[in-house]
Image 1 (tube, one colour):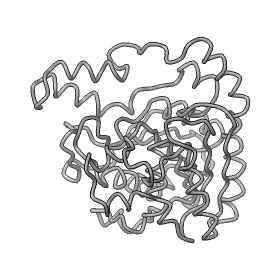
Image 2: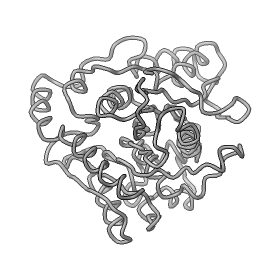
Image 3: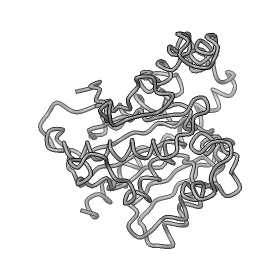
Length: 332
């Protein structure tokens, strides 16, 4: 079934100051046949400020067609100024546990659950890969279920704070003056161990938003401790290329369910429930293209260049699936 929404927390289990009745959720893309399939949990990026629609639905549909039963996670984000701390990590941990606990009902192999994150979503997936043992669940029925992914795809991921302490992602997580211990905890290459799941990492060399060094740091950490990994750096492209196909380039399949928290936040602001002026609510909706379409991101020349780049970068999903097919069988 495509489009089924499941909130991952009960109301009494979840609290975030800027949530305003939003509860993190997953949206499913499950085949109707009885075949047991691997699962893919897609985690959009957005600097932990929002969960990008361009890295949700369009990605899920590609992996659905590739044979996966897919889920997209709309996790807690910090659009304004309330630090997230470990809330997103708790969200993705609970999501993996839910998928594994209900594997039989979802016709999923519980030993083939992959997380696939983009940019800050890549940081969140990698955080679970290295810190899964630390994350306890408030409900016994889930805490006794493993939250360790069987593999991960990390697409142009945020990884390190070393030299990048001013990163928007780290500010959203930890605030303007982060605690040094927490900042170190979110610097993920330092926590890779032999128990870290296999990782498929990719990025474009000219990425001006998340420098390519992030991917190199994590790949090198995997190499040093013997974690199985693939690392691909494409020669051209921009940050945020998502599934890197024509649908992505033309803005197709961008269901905005990943922006639900922002919709509820904007409504609360307009209704006078926050310290912000009412016009801030509409500003949020316009910034994210919710209340009206956003203007074209690229000039015609840049867009045509990116169309040519798709021939190279667009290879990553097929490469990833082939790598996962082998790795998931060998790791069982």
